[in-house]
Structure formats: C-alpha cells, structure tokens
Length: 463
Ligand code: ARG
Image 1 (spheres, rainbow, N blue to C red):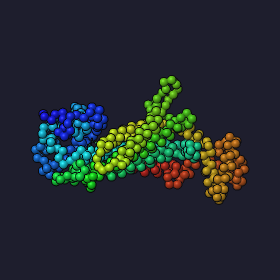
Image 2 (cartoon, rainbow, N blue to C red):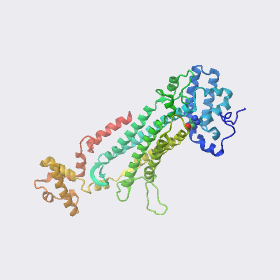
Image 3 (spheres, protein in one colour):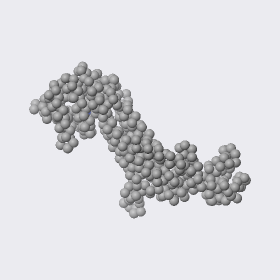
Image 4 (cartoon, protein in one colour):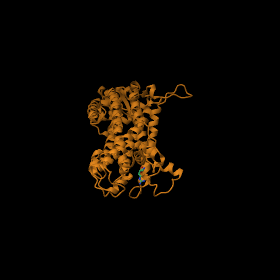
C-alpha cells in the first residue's frame, strides 16, 4: 500500500518530524487508554454518516466491522501502537486502512480530532466517574458497618487535638460518611454538566455536511449536542471539575488517614489495625507502621497537583484548540488512578480497624471533658446564666487539675465548695456516657441520634 507508514498529512509536510519531537509530541502512550471510547464514538459517527447518506452504506458497514476488529485486537493486546501516528485517533484510523483498505477514508468525514478527542474524553470521564462513585459507595458501606458496631463506643472528641467532649466512635466515623456523600454529589454534578455531546463541532466551526448531532449524542448516551462549536472543542471544564472533585475527596481521605495515624500512635493507642495493612521496620524489630494511611495522606498532593496543572493549562488559552490541551489526559488519568488507590486503601483501613474501647473510655475521662456538662447542669437546674456557670466550672477544673483528679473522681463535698446548693444528682453529669447521650440535638452524638442516622444512611446507600 502506497501510504503505508506515512502520516495523514505527509503530502503537506515533507519528511519526518525530529525523533525527539515525535517522542515528546505524541500522546499515544497516554491516550491509548481512550481506545474503547474512541471506537464507540467513531462507531456512532459512522452509523450517523450512513443514515444521513453522507457516505456510501457499503463502505460505512466495512468501517463498522473494521472498528469491531480493532477493538478486539486492542482488548487482546494484539495491537501495536505507533508514536509516529501521534495519538489513539490516528493509530486507529491507520489500522482501519490496513484492515479494510480505502473505505477507511470515509471515516473522518464531517469531524476533526478536535471534537473527537473531547468526545472520547467526556465519555472516559463519565465511565471513570461511575467507577469512583461505586468505590465511594463501598467505602461508605464499610463505614456504616464499622459504625453500627460502635454506637455505644465512647471516645474523646478533640478540638485543637486537645480532649474536648465525649463522642460516639460511630458518630465520629459518620462525619466521614457525610464528607464522602458530598464528594459523590460533586462527582454527580459534573456528570450532569458534561452531559452534552461535542461530536459534530468538527475542527471549531461545525460542518457543512447534513449531520445529525442528536443521533450521535443519543447513541453515546449524552442528553443533547452542545450548542456552540467553538466552545465544544475548547471546553475542558469537565476535566477541571473531575480533578477538583477528586482533590476534595482525596483531601477528605487524607484527613481520615491523619486521624488514623494519630489514633494508632503509641501516644494515643485509640485504634489498632490488623497486620495485613501494616509494615515492619528493617531495623526496629518492634515496629508496626500504618503505611497505607501515610500514603493516603501524602498522595493528596498528587491530586492537588493535577488540579493545579489543568487550571494553569487552561488559563489564558485562546479559542479554540491548541496542543496545550493534549496534556489534559495524563492529568485526569493520574488523578483518577491516585484517587482510586486512596479509596481502596481507605476501605481496607476501615475494614481492618479495631477500636481499643477501654483506652477510648479511659481517655474520654481525661482532660475534664465533662466540664461543659457541669456548666450546662447549673444553667438548667440552678437557673444560672451560662457565663456564670462557665466561670464556676472553670474554677472546678482548676481545682481538679491541682489535685490531680478527673472530674468524676471529685466528691460531693468538694463540688459544694464551688456551688453550695448541690446534691448527689449532679454526679451523673461527670459520666462520659451520660455526657455523650445528652447531646440529643439534631445531628448530635447521642446514641439515639446516631441510631437514627444509621437507619437513614442504610436506606440511602441502598437506593
Ligand atoms: N491528541 C490530540 C489531543 O489529545 C488530539 C487532538 C489533535 N488536534 C489537533 N488539532 N492537533 O489533544
């Protein structure tokens, strides 16, 4: 065949590009990951060309069967990708010529790589978002399972990493459930926004062929075609939104990871992990290190980096397509791969986590975590203003600290030194479990409330 080994523009551009530019300028090693989407988009495009009688039906059918063969070849790893043909689009077109001959020449009618690549990429982001949503769901399910067993597990809640107030371990875990639920919405929001097909925008101006963009949009699962051809080939908002949603989600996971690292430390000893998610040390025989949590914590940096990179690539980029845009795919792929691994590790950490309930209870009793409960008691039972009772409770804490006692170790006689009119009934406010269960306001940490949330979450995660 005459054109074998030639680029599609070989009549216009003489000779080969430099070796170094071929390596740097080609994207095939990255965008071969789009082959399924590229073939699906070409398939829909060619079906439309046949239907609209823009190309002869016989040639069109040859193209369709050729595309199916190419998909199988790539599926089975029997396809050789060439840097010379730059990207996935031209590699596939070249192969089509090889398989079906000159009929392949009809495929690129009424389209450009500019609308082709953004169509493929939107389809990929859609598919990948669905996978992330599934992973998020399974992590949320594991959180529910772990929480269900720990509604009555009292732990110290922290602010400033200082003991603050007793909370239920389930309630703490559900805080992450809420974050992940918002992450899902962010991803879903992007799915709604990107739901318009760019195919048919061609290079930038649309096309003079009588194409049916509604047909291809529908075939590819988009709601409708995009309304402006220039915007269609220039828009990468869906990549930014995807990387933003990924970055926020990775940030949530890094907070979870950091909590776990702290809780698992020898200073805190609040949680333990089974050995299958820990590593040892090459020198210190005693070590058990929570490496997966540290990887999650660190890798959010990759997710932020990818988001920052795409925002910078897009800044000030004139209309419409420029090669700058070629690098968007590697960013999305890396961001996705990183997030998926972090989700997987977070899932395994939750599954393999064991709360040290006794230690949690002990620590919940330290640091005067029921001082606020005492102040609230004086407000409710003795009709003091909160600031008055807050002052009395502060004095009590000072006393307890000086005498090296926890609040629940004080006697009624000692308590009466700070407020005369007290009897034994006050003692219950220093019980950390009572403290936890008294927080019955909507969204609070009481067992009743957490049980309600558990029911709600179980229901919504199913639907
Ligand atoms: N590989 C290219 C990319 O990913 C496809 C679009 C090429 N278009 C062009 N006018 N050179 O951006």
